[in-house]
Image 1 (cartoon, rainbow, N blue to C red):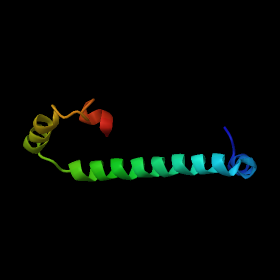
Image 2 (image 1 turned 45 degrees about the vertical axis):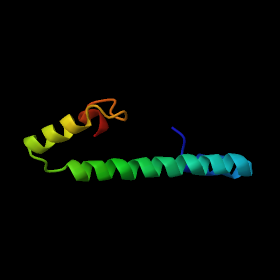
Image 3 (image 1 turned 120 degrees about the vertical axis):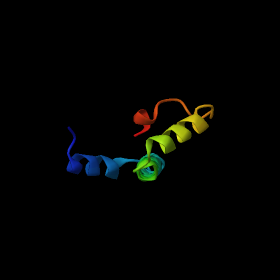
Image 4 (image 1 turned 135 degrees about the horizontal axis):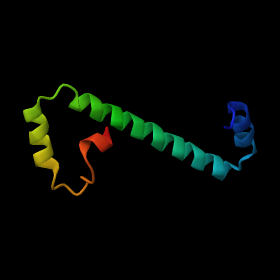
Length: 72
């Protein structure tokens, strides 16, 4: 596994364009983590009836590609 110090040293050698790409990747990862946390908080404490209604209402959505357990 690469240490933090090794990563920091590699970052210092990147071109400006490459560094910007790394920043974009980190920002996308951070955004995805926030979205998943929001989804977990949203779904927390649902009754079985509420969960069934959500699943029924979203099963035909184009973004619906897997089970809710895959998303959580």
